[in-house]
Image (cartoon, rainbow, N blue to C red; front, side):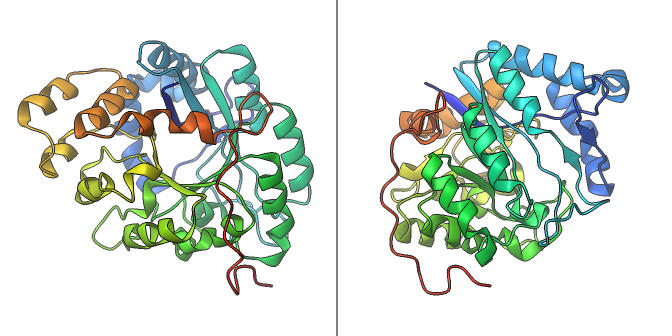
Length: 340
């Protein structure tokens, strides 16, 4: 199966979904580009985002070469004591929203989002796994998840036992409200890795700007240490990530990559030209594709990613309520991997 393992659902609650969306300055600046990339009008976004976004996303998936998309819920922000952090967060998509959609629509794989500090975190994890979740998604730097806290250890161990991989954002974030920038470091993922969780480091830690730290070298070093660590290619089609495209194709890295687009983030194939991997003719053919899911897929095909990158998610994601292929055994827990 060809799977896009990194697709976002967005809503405003207009359809009674429980979603909300409240972008701050950077998000407000970027939002028009996101909606334009999806082919949505200003009126749809302003009054009917729940229905319009989903309808367009399903249309794009059906019109693409993809067999399925992994569709993300989005957790709210919590403090370490388990209390909800009011006023923080850029958008929210309840777990039941993606679980329900997956039951109604073929080609959707539900990825839930649960903060391990929640008082009901383990119960919610069990419920979502029984309902068919294929993975857990978190943005540690935005959700305020210090993975190494000892009180989260039981959560990671249960995640591993259930066969649910963790898709965790790595690298700085410029659109979603960031709570702790230091938690963008892939080293933050050592505790779930040590617990045996298959971890997919979204974006491979690649920095997105002049002032952002580029964690790609950290990610690449960790690949040699942790056989249950993978990375995804989400948002690789942005000009500010072109500098790592060649390195991501090299042996030792490409064998551990999973295809992901990060839609609705715009897909801009000119990144391949900047990296010296695409000619102008190839860029123009990709640029003319109106379907961002298909454009991202073909862009990465044109860059030279092998077939396994596009099908690897089928092996890693938990499918049909059953654990998928067992990940390689995790190395012993490094000293200090979990801390009080």
